[in-house]
Picture 1 (cartoon, each protein chain N blue to C red):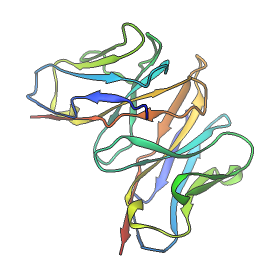
Picture 2 (cartoon, rainbow over the protein chains, first blue to last red):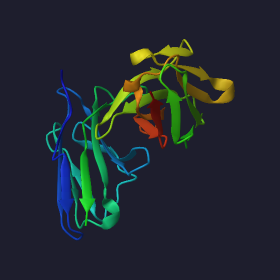
Picture 3 (cartoon, helix red, strand yellow):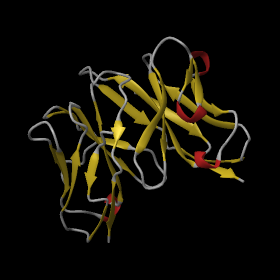
Picture 4 (cartoon, chains in turn purple, cyan):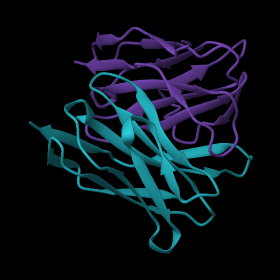
Amino acid sequence: EAEVAQSPRYKITEKSQAVAFWCDPISGHATLYWYRQILGQGPELLVQFQDESVVDDSQLPKDRFSAERLKGVDSTLKIQPAELGDSAMYLCASSPGQGIGTEAFFGQGTRLTVV
Amino acid sequence: AQSVTQLGSHVSVSEGALVLLRCNYSSSVPPYLFWYVQYPNQGLQLLLKYTTGATLVKGINGFEAEFKKSETSFHLTKPSAHMSDAAEYFCAVSVSNSGGYQKVTFGIGTKLQVIP
């Protein structure tokens, strides 16, 4: 069964350091999402890609966060420098289309702890 | 802008009892609605979704939800809770943004505890 792959599963980093997360979506899925989920809250969209293009990054803190999907397949989310408030679960999801009502398939996430 | 309100961040039911998780939405355009489930340290998995047509939607694991436009609600139910249903449940609303892409907004989630 096809799955969204994310790595690492867990990451501990010191504040002010750089950290990166990787996501490999289900093959053929053109739409890729990065979400941040703070403990006790629902996922919040950080960035949405359609192929290699960003279609929504309105909630991405661009002073420290960056995301890329160079060949329209896998994607990297980077934080530099990390802050204590960035501790959260970072979820990647993909979907076969961008239309309303399309199901998103989620990876297991990367749990980031900033100390 | 769209939003989702999930009433009750924690719900406890006895095994075999009815499960009712509440979701109300706000949207200026007709929404599509989802329920996702999340097990500890896992990603989210789709339970069911409402797009158009029949307002009573059946999903996996015996769950169903009814879209009530007049009440702006999409409550999730299951007749008989099982221990394996213990998880966190998220209601989400999907609308089309100005660029024609899907924008999904999640609620804060309801953690379901099943008591043996």
